[in-house]
Length: 146
Ligand code: HEM
Image 1: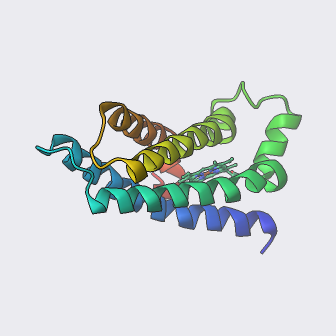
Image 2: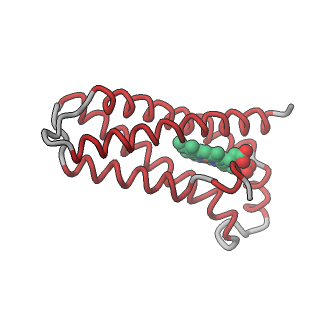
């Protein structure tokens, strides 16, 4: 197996884990938000930590995948269709950039949770934006096919 496939399979494998973690994070964030006290639960803190770590790992695997190994990215760059072709733009530009923004937002959220014990509206909004970006750029078709 070449390096491209090793990185792609690792990235895809961790992708399943991220899906699960994002689901737990979203549910615990909603429970906290609609809860009477707005107290940050242990589950919310832990799920934020693990989701953030998984996102950071994806960034570390994704950067060499994009800039060193991906034949699709190279072909799109060489052919001058990176931004013109919708598939290339979504896979090689929107996906990495949005996931990176989501990783930064999760880091801000986790840092907030380390020092506060009640949730704030701006943190809920950051969480919703992170999950929305993730859901928009996750390659659902490539992973679950159709
Ligand atoms: C939590 C964040 C992320 C998740 C869950 C995720 C998930 C995925 C999944 C499931 C695929 C499809 C794999 C396949 O079809 O076998 C993929 C492709 C890809 N991802 Fe990510 N990704 C994330 C972040 C990133 C980041 C930050 C980068 C780059 C900086 C990146 C770069 C890529 C590239 C370049 C591909 C396509 C490779 C190719 O077609 O040659 N990803 N990603």
